[in-house]
Length: 98
Image (cartoon, rainbow, N blue to C red; front, side, top):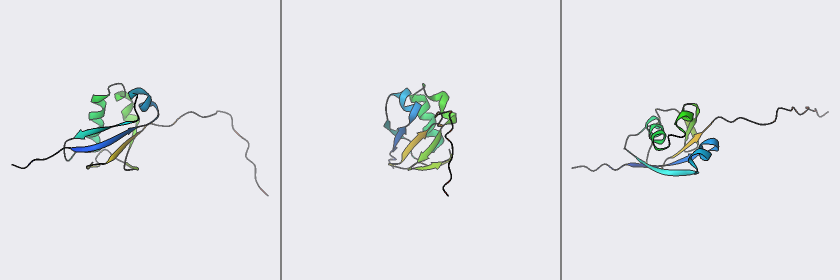
């Protein structure tokens, strides 16, 4: 009988996601052959407080933004990147050097 072990990935949370789950990251053990889509579903089940936000969140694997069909491998880093907003409404004048 062949034994197939799970894939261990490191999940990183940023901005509002970090605030809601109250941690910077965690390690997840997922079935072999898992894709980003299934990892996101597992994260939503584990942390229902961020599930409504996940449809607007981009995913990066090993510091490269990827789609939901991207395969995950042992030791991959999966970062959840929410949209960035905020900043000042005041506009600073532009100057030109002559």
